Length: 343
Image 1 (cartoon, rainbow, N blue to C red):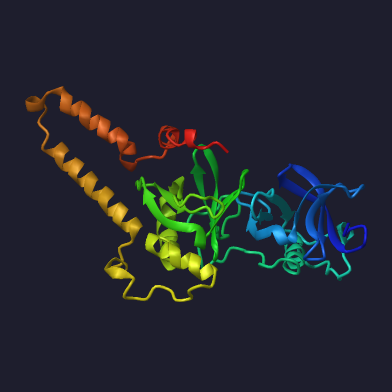
Image 2 (image 1 turned 180 degrees about the vertical axis):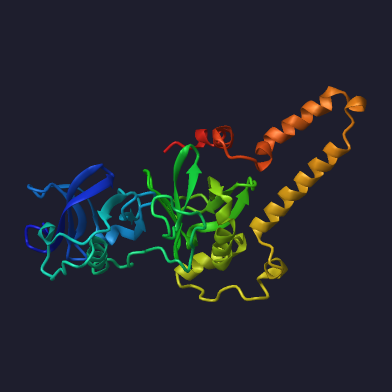
């Protein structure tokens, strides 16, 4: 055991949420080949669960949304079928008595700074964090006013959660199971149900562990329209809207082909400034204009009641024309997706 041999840094009283909801001691083995991230009992040092360093594919540090005081979630995404780990640290300065380490710890440092530094010394891939140059939400944070949010709220089926748009991929959290979609796994991204106040984001993802070449679809619904443009800019910047670029993204990850798509391959659609999102919005507006024109030309005396009832049905299918987002709209938009969620 690394800890028994004095080869691990440890931090006491860390809150874990996945795979167990428990307060445990976080132990970080020093040897990158044999060491591991372990969640241990505070007295016996018996590990409740662990992941070896060599099995960690990605580690992400994300601010916890909707909290009055800053907190940070560390998400450990292992390779293959190893268990994910999620633990949380406060945004406060460290309490030196909770940390055991051969390296000096400045009492003015934050828990986030200390944990990230310890992880980066051991990981092959450094800890990923949000970057405001990648994405910043336009929705004001009610819990910490004046502070920029780097997430959007959404639904995956009936489960609510948060999307984070990072420099290497997209994260969905924080309920089990967590999801990380690195760029090389994304075949394409599109938009549906573009309404006045919300829209849906659709990811077509290839699973590297699956023998099937068919992509898996992930739909995230009820995203605030205020973040419409910011997400689309992120998608365009990383060329995620184009399925033809998927092979190049995977080749880039494997370092097979370092050449990115040139301006000529970008096509005229990219040049004219209308992306997938703008196109969907324009088509929705055109459909709405057509409906309004039909209403203006509608003569109830000549057509009877049947056409009127049909018009009402169309309005219901169009989610009340993008009006107020209320409980009925949420239920309607999520109802068809709830059966798809088996997690």
